[in-house]
Image (cartoon, rainbow, N blue to C red; front, side):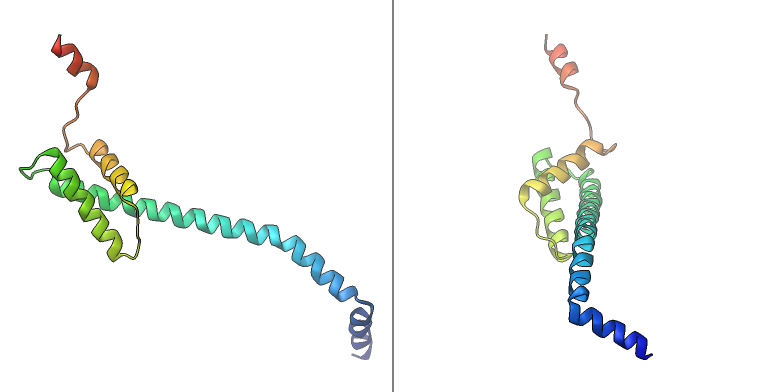
Length: 123
């Protein structure tokens, strides 16, 4: 036990313990930064998945209502915004509009218009 005590005291007195600690911190910093970045990416991915699910549900719930497309879009955007706020997420309107537009385009319940077919029918 005395030998271990002497070794630790020698490490402290020579400053080798400080150098070793600094070396270890420099080696661990990139690993810790990488983990923090990965966690942030995963959190963003989870938030976007939640946003897509909420937008899909809002679009699906409004499909059968007798309203114009713009009214449905505005109402779906409002529903998504309210739900996300209740979950504690504050998103800008452009992000919400993008998610709702994506949900409308993906939905099999909403009619799609092919621009090429529409222009060829006009001739």
